[in-house]
Length: 81
Image (cartoon, rainbow, N blue to C red):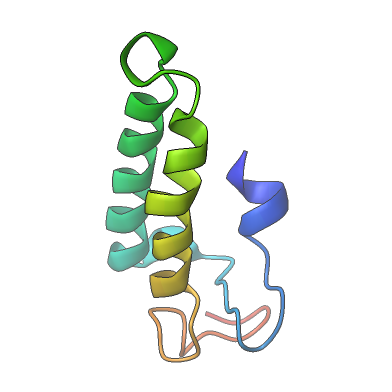
């Protein structure tokens, strides 16, 4: 779900490293994001608004932390790690 829309380099201000899995900060944040997704996509416990809450409270803040010009991928360039 994340790969087509979120895990691409949109611009030089929204960095993404093609070797993101070698960045421990990215691994930690994406793991937490996955755990929140698992919890918030169960209608039995979260109702049907869970995915919306996940986007607002988890995905958006995570991407803001991972993708800024000074974030964990700051030293990476397109095609270079």
